[in-house]
Image (tube, rainbow, N blue to C red; front, side, top):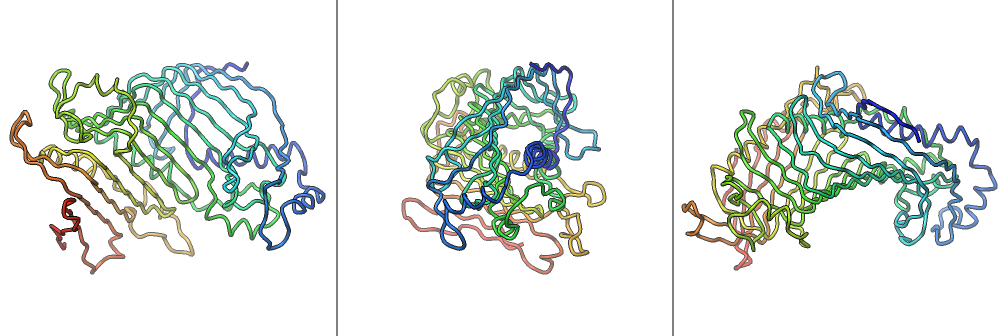
Length: 459
């Protein structure tokens, strides 16, 4: 058992992934010597087939080597700092009372895409975090909560690099679970900083990965051909109950956003993809003691709700909420947000506050200071002349009800059933100069089955 106290970790996504690649693909290789003798290679191809013929991996043996030693580590009162840039002062701080890490070797399925039941060996790191709390500088952002982390990495194989990436999943898998209510308090400035961390840390690419390639491949040309489908990391987050409380920077309450059984999947394959789903989805406004008025909720729900009811209700089975965020290496973003089978109480003043909170929080970057994706030169030219890269945002409400009311108790209403879609598109100024942009808001009556364009403004 190794005991460590008072550790501070600075998390930079790209550096952490490079250290991981070096440790597993270079450092451990050096300890074991050459793992690819000619006889192993010949035996491998005699099993799966040679040349351009279709490979059969039914009986393929990865010949995984177990360099296993049992490790137990306990870290007391560590701090994890996430910054947008390492030299900037602001940071998201994760304070933890204790961290316990135990490793083991396990057999798992699902790595082979065509043979999902085929077993492989994985090195599994189980990490238990007790009494976790999130801060932004000196501002408390969350309640105290426990967290479980599982990290799965393939046990080393002398032939794994011979398998195309579209046949076999070689990524490191990270599972993160919070099995109780997680409450986060977000001011607009904190949300802006969170977006900066995504752009300048988590999604950042300095275009120098070729200088940090630690893998040894039999066929480099084959590696380059399959690089587009190369998944380096997959992160799966499950939060049993998640409540985001939104506040303006002058501490005025805006709304609570509640997710039941929220799932977040992050996939890094050069292009970074984030998928967020939730079984139940609520947007709650004014608080009246233990009750709150509903702005958005599942159709079969009352117009007011007790907060205790949301935290105690059983898990739903239908995904009312689905969001997909795709970020390309040059910083361009695509956000598709779908909400289905909900009712929306149309209160313009609250909707305006919500739109203002999210849209006005978008960070502005300065090339000379922030150096976001697009700053670094390729072929002697900047990838982008505008640090605020292209963004496409689509919000779609499907099979939903819309309630109009001027009654504070929401008892007298006009109900509409329709399909709404809102498109927002931001383009690089230089590339779209002289072109008109369109914002389209369209709806369709479900009863008639016909799509009716209700508004089309040209700016």
